[in-house]
Length: 380
Image (tube, rainbow, N blue to C red; front, side, top):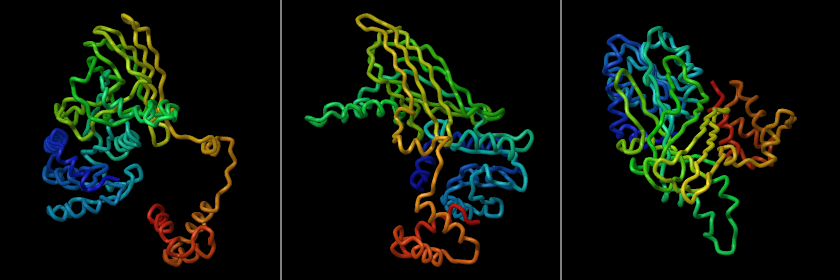
């Protein structure tokens, strides 16, 4: 969950916020119905009202929607903004929106359920001929020299503890992706497009590309740098790439298994996949660096699946042929949920739970936080 401080940083990102403000001002016409997905404090909803929107639907699943209500009141827009604390995929509007605005990306647009949410909004919530902001995102990639960052990732696991071998941790460390901010002069190749997310026609949750890079200069390559360029509306947009004013997003770093010295013109072949599995993306990157003077050809096969922290016991419990049996904690959850039928207070449910499951809860006060969590998640 983002804090108010986090939302403030998003507003303070002049490149991002200025572009969104201009896009909303130009796209929204007097009398329009507008929806903001993932509204947070609802600043885009306020901008839509200022642009002349007749009605605004502000959707946010987290409690930060309370900030949006406060800001709507402070700006005199409570009569035009309707708030929905919900996942947008579960929301039902009284009417379809002429404009839907969102920024539910992470470092990249390939983040959690962002793409499915926007596709659902396009199909279910957008009026015929309506406008999505953003309209499309282009995914970019380049090979990067990142000695300091790579060293911070790997040096604790190499020889930092005398007499101990921590090197088995290097493989999972180097099979994960990381968020950081890099400088443009760290790029060793020209950037290439590796995916287009066109929200107006429907964006895929799986993106793949095969790219050939050529080193623009000599250097030591440490992995791949990924970012996006967005078109919000008409020609209005911005880039989250290195050297673009340090946007709030930063860039995604996919490290290689080892640094590679490259010569100018040397070929680097990349096969890149991003696949949404459940709520998370699995990244795969296969790299082949051609042979050069005094350097043999290098091959790396990597995936965030290999960087995940799975125990055999945990994996077994997720297998299709596994026959599950509820633990006592699971039984307690079911027991409390069954009593949330509108006839008992949370305190009463917690009191009964502590009596029914004394090994889990020594008192009703110990059971209450769990009962409250279940109520927040599942009660109407």
